[in-house]
Image 1: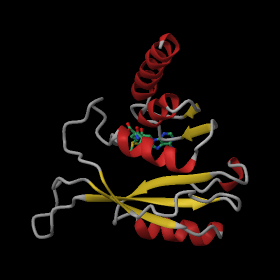
Image 2: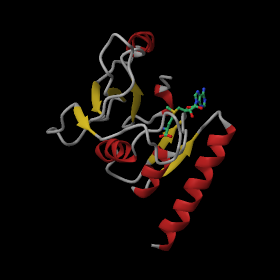
Image 3: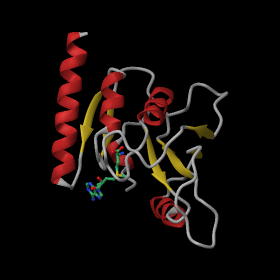
Image 4: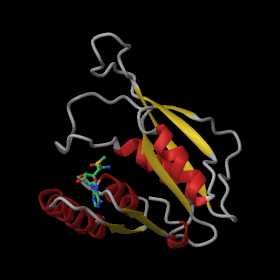
Length: 164
Ligand SMILES: C[S@@+](CC[C@H](N)C(=O)[O-])C[C@H]1O[C@@H](n2cnc3c(N)ncnc32)[C@H](O)[C@@H]1O
């Protein structure tokens, strides 16, 4: 998970998690001697399905790992973000994330043209956000169906962006 060496010294890694996986992230961070610099709370503005006894979960988190020369340029940005999200997913992937959220993460951390990589590509949301912002994209996905879906989605988007 924590492939610091895959990034150049001004790069950063964003990774989504929830409260159940938080301890795993903390252990991985300690093992890699790479601290979590920020933990963004993504408020989905919509109650999800929870346990029969507990509260309805309505947030996920996004951890930020930075290389030594990386910093968020806009010092006014806070670690809570609202992005409405429900059970209807535009591309039908069960764990799909909102493109607006991913676009924002890319925008605040990669102001100039660069390379965005997502090794859990799913339906290709990160790729779509990266291409729209003028970056190059590398995607990895283990599920052949979703890999093919992403490739088609990104090919179509690329062709559209070239025309405009
Ligand atoms: C949370 S989903 C990603 C959703 C994506 N951000 C989107 O918006 O569609 C995680 C994806 O990672 C894939 N995956 C899980 N483990 C993987 C691995 N070891 N290598 C490559 N892909 C993996 C799953 O098949 C799944 O599609």
